[in-house]
Structures are given as C-alpha cells and as structure tokens.
Image (cartoon, rainbow, N blue to C red; front, side):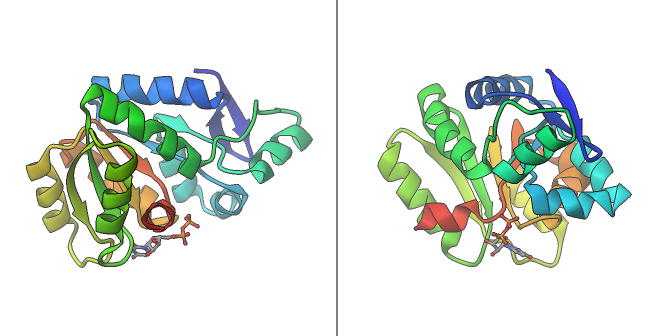
Length: 193
Ligand code: UDP
C-alpha cells in the first residue's frame, strides 16, 4: 500500500475502491488487524500525543476521514488522493459483507443504538448476517471481548469515539477472534437514523 506521512500519521493513499478491496483482503487474512479513520481533529490530538500516534500508526489501514486531512496533506506537500470518510466507507462495505456472507458485530454508542443500526442495515442489505450488538458503555474489556469472541464476527465495528476506540482496538486485538476491526466514531448513531 502507498503510505503518505501527514503530521506524523501514516495515511494510506487510496481511493474508496482500493480501501474496500484492502478491507476484504484483511478480513480473509484474519490477522487481528484494525482500520482507523482519523479526521483533522484527531490528527491534531495525535500530534500532541505520541502514544496515540503509535496506536493509529499500528493500524493495517489508515483512511483520511474528511477534507481537512486532504487539504493538510496538500499544504504539507504530500497530497492524498482524496477523502475516504469512515461512515461512507462503512456504508459501502456493508453490502459487500452481505454478498460474501461475512458476519458483522456492532459495538458502541448508547443502549439501543447498535440494535437500531442493525435493523436499518438489514433493511438495506437483507442478506447481511449481524452476529451481535453491544453498547459502548462498559466497565470491563474482558466481558466485552468474551461476548464478541462467542459471536465469531468476521468484522467488528468499534464506535466509542476517538481516542477511546483506537486504544480499545490496539489493546484487545490479540485476544479478539475477529477478522477485522474498524474504528468508526459516531457512525452507529448515523446508521440508527
Ligand atoms: N461512545 C461510547 N462509549 C463511550 C464514549 C462514547 O460508545 O464511552 C459513543 C457515543 O455514544 C457516540 C460515539 O461513541 O456514539 C462517539 O461519537 P462522536 O461523533 O463523538 O465520535 P467521532 O466520530 O467524533 O470520533
């Protein structure tokens, strides 16, 4: 993958189609990997926080969520092809999961939101297999990891907001039996409508 460093973050210089293709490869590889989608605000956070930067740079794929990152990349002389917003990426990925029979677990947001998002996703992609939902307000990682592992998802959407979701994915990656995780901020709220 063609990587471009913007403000200390190693973005993948990809189009939406290339990002989707890569995500499908990562699911097949089942290698405990995660995708992050930083916007300019998260980029600012990472500039001041080396630990967060390391977690972001540990992602298998980093997508520029927003025109701010793309403009920044141009100003810094390392122009990215364009934005690949997390929410749009997820929306495009879901029908591909349905087509291929990959299961999806929705994790994050307030009680009831992930279930509502699941219902809406099933309406637009009736063949989609949603193997579990879990709200994002919890005390103990272990219980959540056990619940997710019991469902064996091919894909896990992690929607806890930044930087919480990125730290959560990096911290739990090794013990999670999932094909691929994607940190998607407030996307479940959007999908729940
Ligand atoms: N959230 C959560 N657990 C927490 C804190 C936040 O599940 O401990 C959820 C919150 O309900 C919201 C999402 O994380 O659905 C954060 O959305 P926001 O739009 O603030 O995130 P961004 O996309 O800006 O990272």
